[in-house]
Length: 283
Image (tube, rainbow, N blue to C red; front, side, top):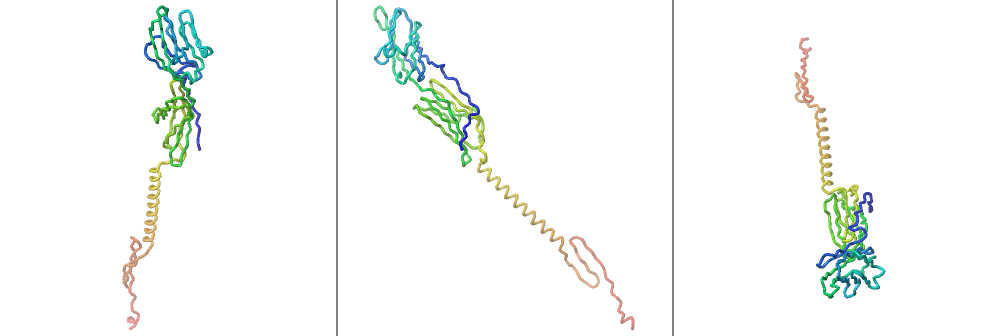
């Protein structure tokens, strides 16, 4: 029988509050950014005067802006909002937004390239709330499972803050991690799952499996019971033997003048007198 424990559940807050920021306003180095599937992705672009800024995906220009004008590619107009402070908001991130982007900044007067920044965008599905189950086995062990969903998830399973297992997943589908523990283990079991865009965890009370006893304990109980039975039988045997010896009389000596009878360690002695010969007296 599988017991689902939802007694104590602690959900961690997301690593981001609905959006993820990709700040490339100052950097000149290559940049890695993450977006949550279905959520907005925010770019912070440079806001230099007398410059022309363009954002490309591969060779397609998504955005071109100057201090006075902004041009957004047609198939992105219903998803992109650009603000004068250099913030670009890409709504409803999809798996198709994954890939390599390039930011280019040119001088307006002579068209000279001032800066290039390469950006890699990865869109990940958020992790789901983990579900933990416990199953007692006939072997005296228990099987503990933690199931969840999400992209590139890192899982940690701990018991009273002691690490039991950690694992990384790569694909987006239903995951299930199972371990076996002693049936007698108890405590607070925590299953924590997270990726670059979200994080959640659940805490349950791990209970002892009823009737699970280790093999050494069973052997000890059996030996004690056998020794106790043997001692009881020996005590009964010697008690009966002693009682029989005490009750059995033994004749030690017989004679005309003195008889001696022994009852255990109590000795009783008596003497008999010889009767006179009546025939001789008559003579």
